[in-house]
Length: 171
Image 1: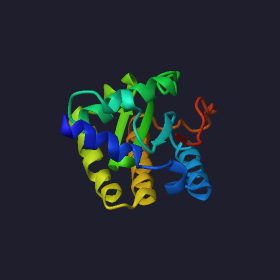
Image 2: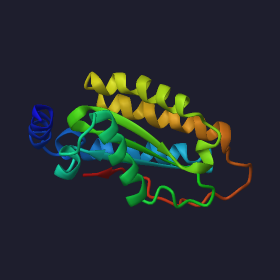
Image 3: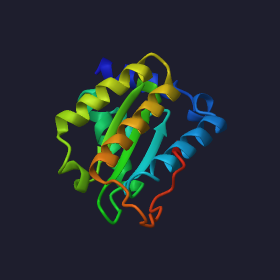
């Protein structure tokens, strides 16, 4: 019970994402995603939230599980699953807890083990946990891009449609 109350207070005091992630940083993330997508046929989306909605904060369970549930919900809401090759990836950042999640579509998940994704999340989390949000997200984009280049390289001479926006979704 007390854990949930502390969780609600922490998230309500988190403030707005725009205080942490300014327009210049968003522009750099957009450019990095666009540059990444010139190397593979996948789609990379970034979702940054300052805090979770109360409906998530009042759930039973660990913050790890709740954050994962929210990332999965955002994956669907942002239509990351809706790509021709089913190779979209959502990089989800929750600022209140300095947590990062990677959610990949089924076309990519067939090729990458859950342990590999978890290992990436753990290594990416260190920069974010220490407060280096931009460095952590740059690292995340690079790591996801490397996986997409390995499994879905852009074929020479092929035209790559941009199926999803490159700009981060900030809430």
